[in-house]
Length: 172
Image 1: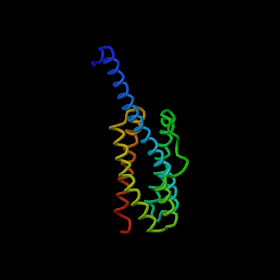
Image 2: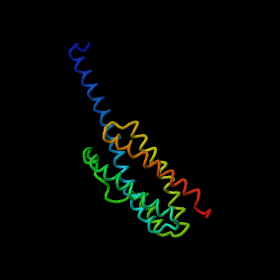
Image 3: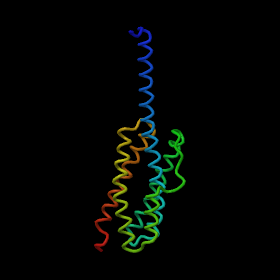
Image 4: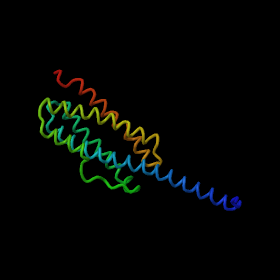
């Protein structure tokens, strides 16, 4: 039995509405995931940076630690109103991997601390650059995309510093 013309039209509109809702949910979820991850990273970078500023064996590591604290505090402050707008709660504690790194660093000193710290910063900031670039390309919320666009050069600068430090640690 053929479907009457008016029902076909209603069904098409319903299917289109469901597809748009599913797409919007996925896009919103992408933005929420970025904001949640960025805030987790900020929290970790602030704490690890504070530790590096205190325990670093070299002035370069200490200065980099201070810069991490400053830059990630600013990024976090800029992210908080966006998170509130899209319904993301800032993390209250470190993610398990970040806590493991912090615990490991707390138990190290001297050149071993610097090497572990710098290697973690190179690896983490490579991932961070990709995270921010992905949001710039795929994000749907304009405020979240702007935040990613502003944050990506900061994360890329941190990566360059960490790579430079990695090339000098153990060679002095």
